[in-house]
Length: 236
Image 1: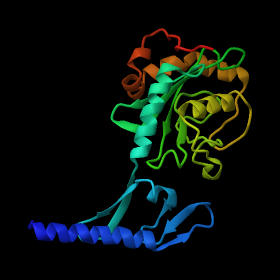
Image 2: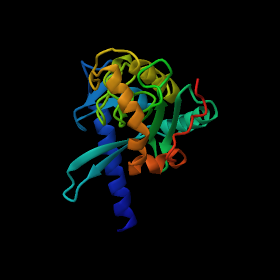
Image 3: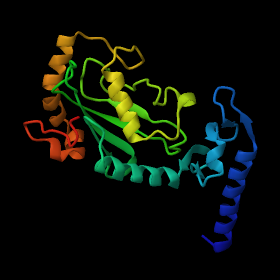
């Protein structure tokens, strides 16, 4: 491709993005967010002024296929949080990102004493959006617990079910501490389920065997795959 042609196409893509950001209208359902008619997606105006890059993907015919939002701020923030939670984990919790994806975090929650979950090891994921910390993550628990539906998104005030209540000051530690508090309550929400205490105790007793049989758990937590469950750094 000739240099002039490459420059022309680059200028064209830049013009498309500029046009898209100009042609926005206020979204009635999300305060502070704007719905782009051009992209057909939600764009946070704060992102546009804080270094978020928009890349328009085109198929072979030149039609729009999707929009990618990439934020250096999200990467920097999550790397800092990884250092902090590794150094000082919350009680009954550890968490770490997937090796090749800083936005996908995996956690282990140990059942606290005086709850039906005592002795249990509950593994799940917190998936952050590229716009983090300006938008909340999706939260899932994979291990059967009797409290949450396995592999279903959980509705909490800190999850993507409630973007209007999200506080950018919240981070991995506060999210998972909140999840543990929600877990030991009986509050009803999307993704939650009901079970007796004896049923939940049964899930807890089988939880470690369930986890170490899953290749994803073994890939993220190889140090927790011994036949006998080991304590977390902070057991309260």
